[in-house]
Image (cartoon, rainbow, N blue to C red):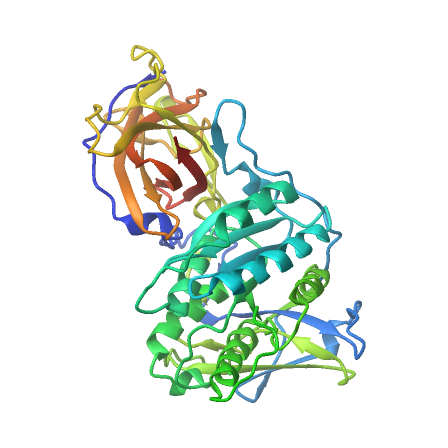
Length: 513
């Protein structure tokens, strides 16, 4: 049974919900233990490569010997090689259950390649939005049943998740209908680098390769094609590191079709779109009338690619952009892959001795132990949450399985108090010994955004629970208050294990009537 012991509430920064799990220090090992392999500081360059022939057909069955990799014109050996030719498999939608709860359990059943749509209408007029809405509807009509999508949108300055991964066309169309058309919202500027950073942060926790279909009407122009010559090199370094870590390929799609360009501005935008695409292994689509068909062509190729890794010779973290070139025999094939990386210490294998298949034992009272995987921090925390009015009867406060994190407070004017109830499965946290009894410590945070991506409410708290048994088998149930505005809200939740650094996150729309 859980003893209801809770630490004082601690306000957490809003950025917590956008942060990926922090890299944990490697566990120390005894030099007397045999069978360890020493890993040194090596920069690993991973490339997902799509190969097509002159007719646009995917090329399968190429051996590793057909590929040649050069890093800054220095030929390097291929360290690992794998061909992916996945059979598309549908994932279940994440509908709202009858009890009004939401879950991120779909993270356990994702296909190996994910497709994400970004509807960037932040600087798009009504006419452009209506045209995009029509073409996107045509796109969904032809979308195969086994192709799940997630839909993000930028209607203001920030990115908002309108629909999580689902293959349900009704849900996807409903999300698009909430996004467009709408009256443009005046802003001083629309920062594309901020959009890409927010997108990468949202997707870092999700494994596998990801294709981003970014529907835009041109976007921001940077000052140089070569990242090393750009005035925004510091920002680009952060962005490209995040995109590389999340294995994201960008496919910017110009929704305007062929347009006159007397000033050359459109051409400059297309150059920037090409840079984003080539530097991440995607493709820019512009000067096309039927963008719905172009988007389908991207999805047609998404499940077939090769993954290979290589390392530069005598790696030095000089913070500069370094070029990747990959060729394949025969040379008349077309390749799509990431064209470079920043040498800033990102993706370095730490100098740590690791024993293969090693398991960590946690010492409990009475000499008992619990096995824990050595890569716990890399696995997302799966949990369920529900949002109910604060006036709704709660679980009996005498129930030891239920913990309210803070006494209820009156809502501010124009807001309605709700309770977010978290349910976490048994054993999700590593128990640690305190005064002879096992306890767990974790943090929860909830943020509500409006449709512009602006935070309108937040609550973060640190939790410590003690147990009267060594290996608790009951779910962990806690609840916290959040005051929401009437109308559409977009709620982001995070659960962070302070012992392992594991993070679980969940986002969903919620309407206050």
